[in-house]
Image (cartoon, rainbow, N blue to C red; front, top):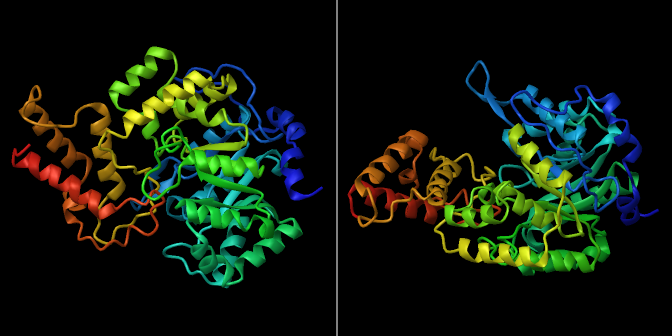
Length: 443
């Protein structure tokens, strides 16, 4: 059986059936939260639930020294609830959450039989990490240690944009040859890469399929990126089509575009609620990605139990989108591009800023006010003075003065690793000008 056959036939059915007996904490409900309605997690590839856990947004707390650390107890509770309800694919990376994600995820998962879940992680030799062979191999082995395992189900070359990046980070140093040998030895079960970039770069990487036999590829796909990709990214409909015709399994990242598709502008939310008043706005985005059969797994970074339960409610009672509903979402996406939003997903790859700016925080504050309808557009709007003062007060409360957009000097150190290819200094200057116009009452 070759690798391609394995991923389509390797089932976790027997192990999954035993989970209720072996789970450290089998739960059906959490205090204060409604129980998820019973149902069956859909699978496009036998053994792998379509809803997967993205481990980039675990809940954080402060330690005794005031440092941000992952709340391991909360992680354990989320993992227990997820596994009990059919989620068995967990995706992490060495760079997630200041390097803490793999270890925290490994601690939570290691309480279960190793055959009952899939581990996906990455070789993240981007900005701040050496592209050397020795450092890459050491990163790979650390991932094994953190996950307390002697094999990784899915291993990715992280955040590739084009052939040049692949050559520099994996070919010239011999790392891709090492990874292929690890796959042959069975310590990597499936090898692939995650992609953000131009169509030309994607085509160049797919041209290497005959040589490297990509077992899966991770792409950004949602109903907005389907035809309206952000920055330098490629239309998701093209990415899906190319992978589908080659029968390469697809893992989806950013099905909510960093949460923005769970909190769309009010006018668009009203259209969605008119159609499905009992369902969340986020459910539309997950029904979209779950309706495409080549999708092996759609990752969601579920920080809170209510996020996890809402997504489970969508998938355990899954209803694929009709053609008419897909057309409706295309119309929503067409309208959404007219809003002045920054396409930031809060991934934190731009951080830390050498000048202390809270880049994701500034973008989130700005985007949240646009979608909530509290964006101040001019003197002609109702209660202009009150709205202006409230906006400025909330900005200062949400973002400390020393971390606001006006401290950007356009060094552009943040830009190379932004998966959305945002011109970050340009956007920060735009927001700063807006804030200054509000202060000077020039709007």
